[in-house]
Amino acid sequence: MNRSRKLAYSLGNLAASLTYNAFFTYVNFFYVDTLKLPAGLFALGFTLYTLWNAINDPLAGALSDRTRTRWGRRVPYIALGSLPLAVFFALVWLAPFRGNDPRLFAYFLLIIFLYDGFYTFVMLNLVALFPEMYPSLDERAEVSGYRQVFGLVGLVLGIALPPILYGSFGWEAMALIFGVVSAACLYVSLWGSRERPAFQQDEPLRLKAALLGTLANRSFDSFVASYMLVQYAFSLIMAAIPFYAKYVLRLPEQNTSFLLLATILVAFPMLYVWGRAAIRWGTRTAMLGSMGVLAAALLPFLVVRDFRTALLATSAVGLGLGGLILLTDVLLADIVDEDELKTGVRREGMYFGMSGFLGRLSGVLQTQTINGILLYTGYNARLAVDAQPPAVLDGLRALVSLIPMVALGLGTVALLFYPLHGSRLARVKAEMAAVHARKGARPV
Image 1 (tube, helix red, strand yellow):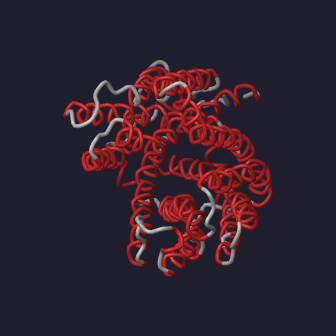
Image 2 (image 1 turned 135 degrees about the vertical axis):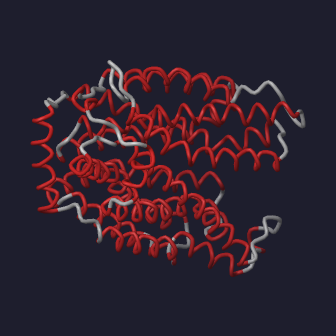
Image 3 (image 1 turned 120 degrees about the vertical axis):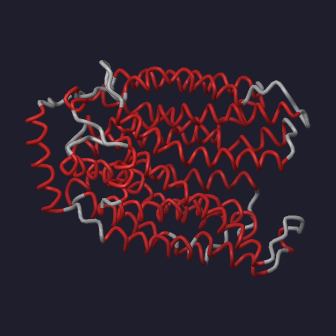
């Protein structure tokens, strides 16, 4: 496949990241502060949403794997779901009710359920195409790099642009602009999306067998254990940085954005570096290296005292982050290849769906960790910055350094048990190529 189609396919990740980050960053503020939905009702609705968000990933994956149409297994979901996804994203910010009106809560709950349902089906099928279209490590490293560059652009735009747009033109303008951009990116990605008809000839597994087979896969178990710990560590760092900047460094709030932006900007060129490392030394080795670099980059947060050194420290975080975001999908794609040899079926949907489901648990643990540390150390939001107990500062340093370092260490141990590397991976690739030749699965 030529580079223009690779870039077109990868552009879909901008839509995924743009809508995801805008939603999770601003939906609480919009409904509670702007529309005056009682905070308790928002918390209830978001708890129900989180449960739905967790279970729909494996269900969507299983359904996608079992789909058989003349247009393929994945493409129909992307083609038919992209416009409704953009519409329901926009409707999240176009609520016609305010305040204690019970219809506001009902609207909120219905719209976020519909938005997330379409988001799951579209984005899961988009990423499920990745292992099928790009079977070689070289192509997977290249295309994963493109995808993550677009993902980082979406992250920056999804977090930085909304205040400018809703502050100048209103929430409606932000909703419509982001909706149109996301739909356009997804339909461009369809131009770069191709499926192999031979894979539709396989008899799909039943749901129970698919779930049990996925969880019994040793390669997947070690991968997902490491993945959950890495996700936990990174989300903990990102969520704790605003507290760390305010109370430990005593910086104005706008400087927090610069700290986070420094991490993202450094991660951009590191995508290429870690991609080359994966091609030369293998994906597992490169992933272990990026985890080690990230863990080492967290040590300075124990002693940082001012904005300049904090900026250097958060920049160093990007050195390891680039590898983590690049190589995760590549590792999972290799697991899908090995599973095909065992089951005779391509099951990208189930594997990406289950990893998404289990990855959600790291977000729950991250929230509990931060709130637990703040409660234990005596944090009080009503106190002035310089009136917080000294234990709060120690707790915040631990949240951005020691605790994520421990998580990364445990994640490294888990990945050491990942068996799909070296000669075993080479054997899987060779056997998979032979299987695809028998199926008549031609390169896309």
